[in-house]
Length: 270
Length: 256
Ligand SMILES: Nc1ncnc2c1ncn2[C@@H]1O[C@H](COP(=O)(O)OP(=O)(O)O)[C@@H](O)[C@H]1O
Ligand SMILES: [Mg+2]
Image 1 (cartoon, rainbow over the protein chains, first blue to last red):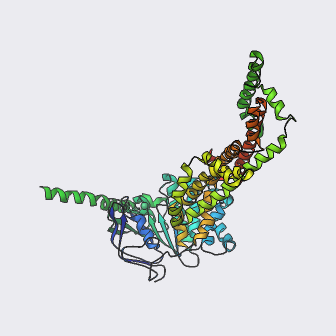
Image 2: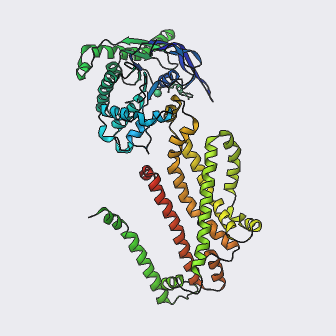
Image 3: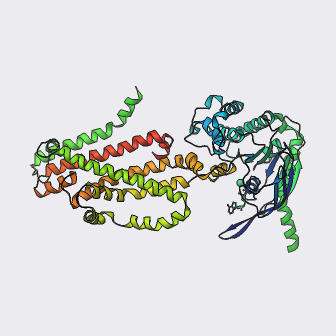
């Protein structure tokens, strides 16, 4: 039951001024310990909502979420979060940004200094600990955000399009970096369970053990694809035939949803 | 070339224009024989600024204290009110209508009432200045405290961080640039308020000098007082600018 996530018929309806918006419908998924799950789906299909529901940041309107077998009803501190924007504190040094979770959680930040420096070393930022965020490139800032998420060694890592704002080259670098960190950074709690939301099909395939494909609003699970590519994954992985097949399969599921619907409505019309 | 030297070069155009204007002013007055009570020459203005016919130091101190007091009351009061508004939505809903009302009120028109209630002296002038200057501080403090990335707040929520801690670590530093840019406006408003108070009724201060020199047609003295007021205003404004560079250096390039 350790570091597992179980979603059982999770539904989420936002009440807005212009009426209810159904963001998630009937999401059921079991994620095992140390699994790397990518989530792809069209914009607005509820991917961000799903991550926040799992973290206990938004109360779901139906179904249950179990983390480690315990029902999630309020924010759980065992998650690390990384967002599309690095959201670093501009007035703090890189090191102090990484230490923020310790302070927010009421722990003694001095005890985490060594670990923070170790993490920054792991992502190649050991020379930047005293710099301010605006002295770093976008990719470096996102690395700092990753270190911050890892500081308290959370068993679950929830990443919401973390590399979406980076250029393609930096993004590929960051993917390798993330897998390297995931492989090395086992900490005291074993390999982390990661939910990784992305817009990019190749990125999803490259990283994941399984790719969850979601349909347009209301977000439902359209397909779950097992990615049986060897690890460690390298630059060459992207050039293999299997990588292409998986990407194509997911692409067809995503678009086929639309064309499938279209042909159905076309039939009803004729 | 040193960096400081380059910086100094940036000021050259403004300095040149200033010198040219002063020279033209001086020449115009002496060449066309403009009467002194209409427009005194720069030389006679400078002369009157340091003349011993009146107690400049005394007047400068009276107005200086009024400006400083107005500024501090507006700053402290504005930051407190802004924080209360950002902290509690209920307090925000209770206070905002009053604040908006005070803001649209022509504060200068309230000056005679302050004098009626508080009598002559420095206090009513401080309060008028504070009244003119505090609203931008309230609004900017509240905005600075509330305008936080939702993702950033989620980061705090994940750790069940108490509200005061989110304020201390995230919201308050985030508000520094907003507060400091409001304080620059307040620095100017404090000067206006203090002088208006002295215009309405006073026995000392630079505003008093302007009023009395007007009735005695001693225009160089009025100009001298005007320059001293500007000096006080610039000192306060400069102090706030330096403070903002020290406290919130990261805001430098986003403010300009
Ligand atoms: N706080 C909110 N209030 C109301 N509606 C929301 C809120 N957050 C998201 N939504 C709506 O829910 C749907 C899913 O949003 P989101 O989870 O952000 O999707 P994604 O991350 O897949 O783009 C969208 O239609 C969005 O407009
Ligand atoms: Mg999203």
